[in-house]
Image (cartoon, rainbow, N blue to C red; front, top):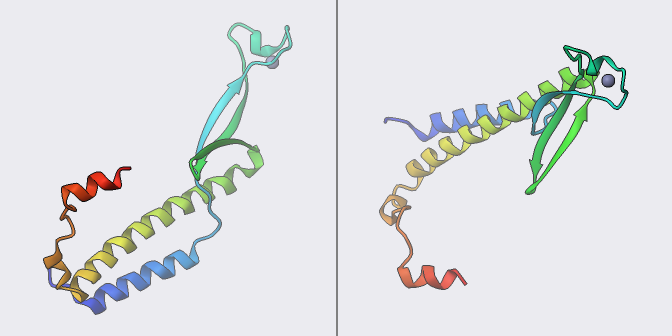
Length: 130
Ligand SMILES: [Zn+2]
């Protein structure tokens, strides 16, 4: 690897600019479902059944709490774009972190000697568990 700090910094700047340009976003996963209603003579009970739908549902987890939310058909395109932007943000953040770690290794070469993977002494780990 012959990367220079300046080229890494330029690539990080590109990532930052891409993040600034991202539109609305939200996390979640879209799913589709078909329902059966309560009416006895409805088409959803025919043979073969013609269930109602599709209905679109968005599932997401935020701060450890999971929720679902119905999405109207007319909002589908917007929501899909928001989900895409969220994925893009995650990719960009990941790239930034990778570049940042590489840059840090170049700027702080002595940190290598410390050994990032070195575990704390056993006694200390046990004490932390309480
Ligand atoms: Zn029905």
